[in-house]
Image (cartoon, rainbow, N blue to C red; front, side, top):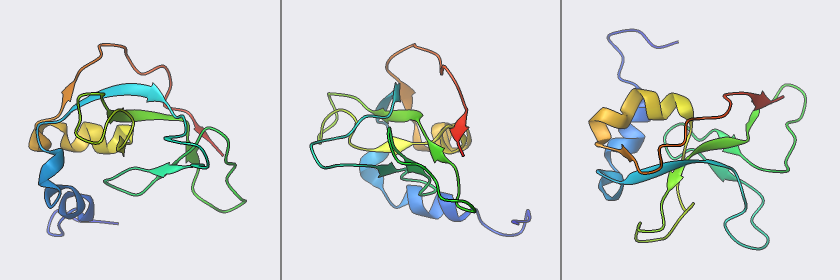
Length: 111
């Protein structure tokens, strides 16, 4: 567990990705980026996001929804994913905007 004296390792991951500064995101249910693509990871904490995968006993839950890049992002819509926790923690520091005003439907994770 981190203390106030220890840096948040997620911040180190995100702040080195200057191509994500000021990017607009949208809230979406996870879907495969392309054929054969079965999951993605939160670019901040590496949480797994998938529409079909199931976590094995003892593994971290799999996310079904999250914030993802929009069509105007250089790599296109749904290229990068951000979990709700990382969004809440880093949206201001990363200058992220919510391009679609649709509110999160759920923060449930599949166990």
